[in-house]
Length: 62
Image (cartoon, rainbow, N blue to C red; front, side):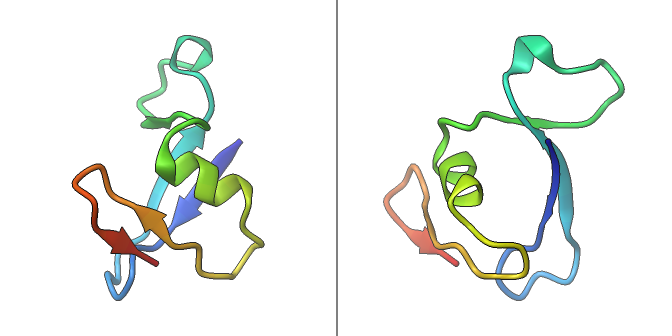
């Protein structure tokens, strides 16, 4: 699934494919694994809602 997210107060959204890298098309769309912290947060979120995530460095966003 192609998703668009906005991080905190950053005005620029990011669009990427939420899926497995080896199944992604080579059209230049970045890929995010559903097993990553961001992927898990997106899978559990409702459209238009904030979804906090844990950064690999231990910080939070949301």
